[in-house]
Length: 573
Ligand code: ADA
Image 1 (tube, protein in one colour):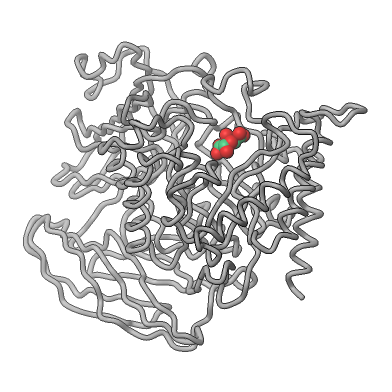
Image 2 (cartoon, rainbow, N blue to C red):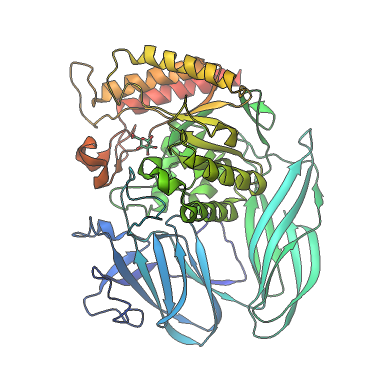
């Protein structure tokens, strides 16, 4: 689902709704041919959804099967899955159609020569972990499983446009852009087919050519460069979007793009040549009643809260968020940091150096760039979070991801969230240095304000020694837990007051520090976490949200709001 119609001519049918479902704790479904028909005990569930919110299945980790009957007029069908957590094997009428690994990205599968009538789509979902899993089993969020985002089936006719990427560079004065489109065309027909292919930018034809493809053939095509004059920039205060379209004789594909320039230089971050302070917060796309199948209405509500708090940016910690959420950010001018779920503390040194894991992570970056490229809201790509960047094992991974994201990621800054600071050896592989640090929460400290100042001074020197003063520094995570409704007369850890005071102090300290160009408070809402996090997580939740899991504000919410609204005013001057 997107916030606009991606297709007007193409026939798209949503497969959201009631599916049949059963768990397969002994992993015998393949042997017993569940792909053809689920066993009698299968129940009805809603897709998108996670199975963990069904009573009795909160802790279920393993294989489960989903089945949907649908009607089609037949032909070439494209099944689009918004996300399946974590591994999906898809079958059509009992026969394997394809598979996908990774819980947070869209994938699609094509079936040809489908007969008119009723058919059965079956998905085997597996959310177990192994040595090559990304993330690894230990993460600070919940191990949900299921078909977590929308599913649809499209009927493809003739030559179709499967993908479009809008690549551009702006002139120095930002008034003009040189652009081209990269498009993927596919012939869905069962014979060689010819079509006129037209590419439009805001209804203006910028490319037209006759293309001929054999049955089932696909091709990537790059249009010649064209010029966009009098560019209407995309910006936080005026998030202007242009409509782009690829039209063929039988098919269409629409998207929205925004033109803006993001730069990191002289230790600062610039958006459209204007220095910007990132006033942000980390957000998981999670809710106790919906898991990671986050409903659209709640996304809008979360964004209202984010805006009320005065944030101009969010970090999608720790994985690519729903594309429809990105559409909202594009539309509302909220900047975004998008990353893949390499969550460090679960990654042993041998896992970091494992070529299979490195390649899988690279594939995840490829998918993220592929699907999210056109979103102007994304200004930061995050390579990984809190891995052991003090070890040489992290170098190869960081180098490969940085190189890829710089070459293919468009006009974005690359970062990683570091919790090794003074001994980090990977800082050459980022444009923006991000620091995750929980002074005042983990460990004992008599005076967190003084400790922060001391740390920042040390880091400032380290940055000079490394000759990296040109790289801006942002605080990627900091904060403290505050149990909603917990108050005492003394300012002790775990109360709303302690959390609010610590965050307020951090925000003032960071805002006043000329080295720091942005802050991402940890975190937006309390989130359910996994058992591996142990007793350190009261209620089974990470309680560092400034609102609780049901979106009720804590004292910290108002602390952030006071600070961010004031900083935004100061920055306007
Ligand atoms: C880390 C991590 C977060 C969360 C946080 C915390 O920095 O990146 O996901 O676990 O710590 O609450 O301790």
